[in-house]
Image 1 (cartoon, one colour):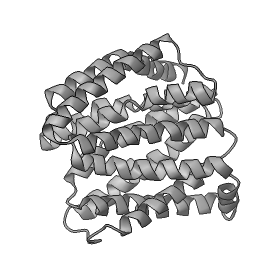
Image 2 (cartoon, one colour):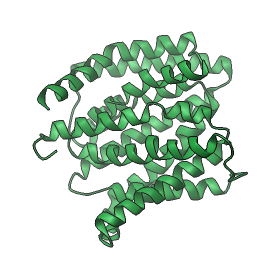
Image 3 (cartoon, one colour):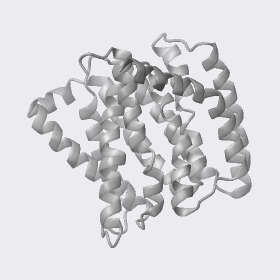
Image 4 (tube, helix red, strand yellow):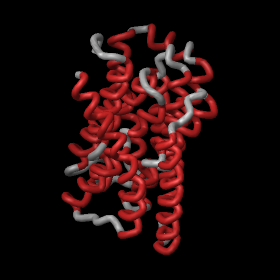
Length: 290
């Protein structure tokens, strides 16, 4: 990593993080836990896992880093907690592809927020993508209103907003380490779920699926995604989430045969066909320069 440029470091971290995230929706679908049981374990297991690692690395400096993160840390704790809750509840209340297409708007939201607050204006291609994304969202929402899953879709969009705000927050505090703030965010997620959870019992396949999901698809990615915006713009970090939008529904379709509806495919396709070229060019550049 020492020999890589900031652009390469940020791109590599974001790329690896999203690759780990891609089967997340599948694990959620395979689990027999209720919504709040999932939210609890997705908060508790990553919290204890990453906290232990952080304490081994930083020891008591962990708390110093946490308390010196200031306002940026508070904002990140809030956005991180909210997105972790809304993502799971969204997946449980709408088609997986719908949720992931909503989340795919995060790069465009990041670009807008970055231009306003960080003075990092998007280029012409990004502006065109914002328009295409807006039209795709309207198309997906119109279908959801007919199917009665508007609730899940809107939570997916709230997740995208949270991702965008979180990435811009990290970008604006490049000199600060916000991983401890993310750890505390996971604690808040678990505590919040305690008010709604019906059972803590893990049985049969959940004994394997839940811990595996919480470590591979949650703990590892959230650390990498929290670090990546320190090296590259927030919009570029969230651009990698397009991989989840493309690959996530494929995992679900291959394993449990949940097929995306036509409106979601068309809405997501209009967005991804334009933006995926930017993503794959970044990946190609990363691989060549590495």
